[in-house]
Image (cartoon, rainbow, N blue to C red; front, side):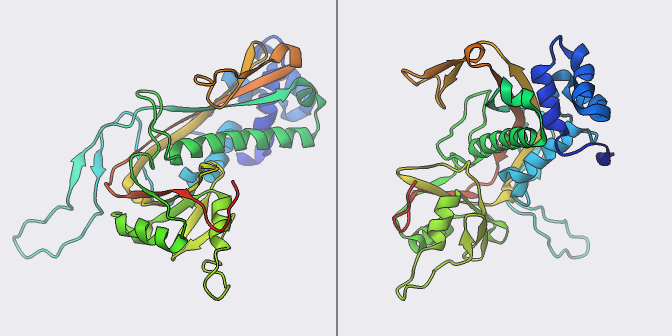
Length: 341
């Protein structure tokens, strides 16, 4: 079934959503006129505000799978996926096997306790595109829109998941997995920071993963020993290994003038769900150009009507719950070897 559409079908559905005048009834005529025989499939993907479902191999679902695989959630092996709104047991320690004598009771892994249900939550981002770029057509413009959408969704999802400064919003946004974990200020030395993180870590080191931003990873990889050699040559912008533990990098990991963060995570102690994305468009109103619109005293405001732009809002349905105490340790203010933010 996946052979019936291309990687750009979803982006073309978004363009149809943004430009087809007259609502859903005009989606198919617009798409067929612009893309020919594939127009029917594109129009179908655009119906309902370009919404993915968690079943079936439609273009929207496949696009979400690509985004998910590129995100931290998709790259951390061992995360425990659970259904929405179903009360589950929390795995607060790893499962164990026991030798059992005849007629003896089988011991239980300690402890598996009843945990709270994982409720649906949303992570949102907005991409602004000019009508000219959407109307221009051509594969180059479509690929650019697809990249922008995927990057916006992936970065917003990663930042919500990993940013130690994100404490969440009650009944709206889950805290990041790092905000409720153990936070250790960096001493500016990679070796010392690694030791401190490992000493405080109470998860399964054999399943653990480091997460950080690409620049901090490069700085770690360029750290020199007393002879001028590289301490950690296996670490770079695209990840690698640090002290034998895999490194996953993302631009969603926070980095500012005080440095980045380096997190040691046991994915097996984290329950999660992420199953779909919705994209809606608006061509009217004002956009507040700020990453903190509620607290910015004088944000720049841009009229979409005046600038002939379309705002494409993506909403990811995702939530997570770290269930193992000490399973997440984060070095904050990590800045090594003259690293520049």
